[in-house]
Image 1 (spheres, rainbow, N blue to C red):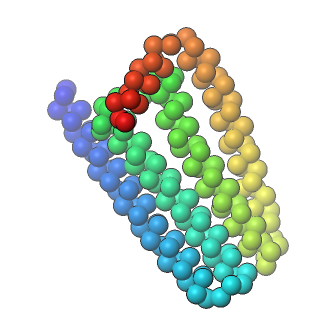
Image 2: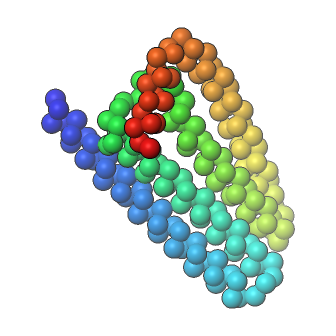
Length: 166
């Protein structure tokens, strides 16, 4: 059985590297787009290009966070998500960057809607999606906290694992 767990850890390590590589590629593309926007002139289209570059950077952060979390949870710690504390912490790391990424995308859509007003509905839907995700995340954290109180040793275990990584 340990052989299979090592194989899974190796697969997770490869996945983490691919997410990190995708993050680096997105950062390079965002930097290039931002630079082209700056040298192209300081006008409304440059602002839109910079906001799109920010959106790419937000996606890069998501990919890098996924890479880091996979590495920490599945390769370094060799822990499996079972306790409510680990589930909440695992999902919360992603939710922060996903909410930011969708909000940036909504901002990009809002800028594009200035030229094409029919896109404003799309931007509004994205902002509503951010609100719904935040509400759902808040409910999840609230309900999960109640479950965590039933297992205080799981919280202590998770905190001790954090000290191991420092």
